[in-house]
Length: 312
Image (tube, rainbow, N blue to C red; front, side):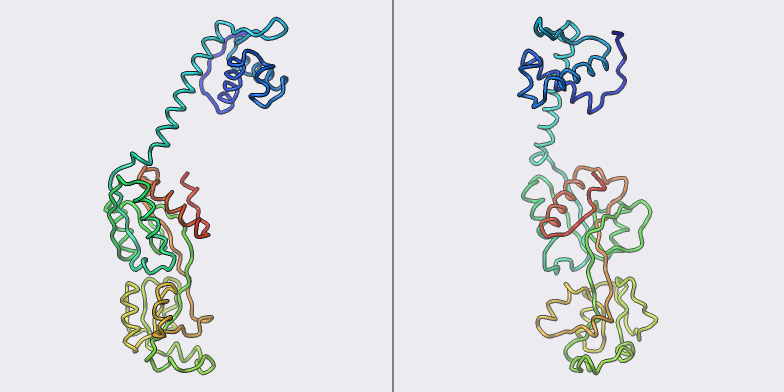
């Protein structure tokens, strides 16, 4: 059997070597059957495949008994060292929970704390409890500001409303949220019934053009004010002079107290997509992947479907 040069190892090579190791440690093919859960023929084929791969005999096996060849001795001891190295590597990975450290700078879309399921809050809690050596730096603001800070490495990761994608940034989808057109309780239209309010009536009302409401055809509306964030929109709605779009989770506190209502919600609604964003060149950094793993766990616990696997 001619010796061969091995240029690259594969997963199948490791599988065959593990079978070889078990056979050696059980002093033969027959005793190794129960340990491996394989029949004698399958084990023999695996050993033959390994010998063909290396180009030399590893052991004598048959009626005369089992015995390693000199080459088999070398391979067995080399694999033990490799196996130990893999175990050590696994231990290092499993100990990362205790050793991961550094500062993680997170940018969050303004007013995300109002989300009733507290996704970000629970993720921050999980990171703090599981990785006590990570220092968290948190800042909030608009989605546009988030992209600028990411591009200049002022923050590491952002949780924000999806906007027009920028080159150099990676976007991972989170979930979709509905926003509706709201009026406050002292607005002239508030006490009118659904049947009394037409689409034309609503479109003629002074309305806030919210720059975060991508997808709304503002040319149809009588826009009389402009905002960049949800808090400013809520302020103006509560003046009783304007209608405006807010995400349903953000408006819930005023809906529950009777201070706002949605106007013809089946006709006046818009979809907001939320996402996690980071620089493409930094997707594999340990602290960022740590945050994503924790966030993914929280989202799945709440029943959300994510595409975080795209980075794994």
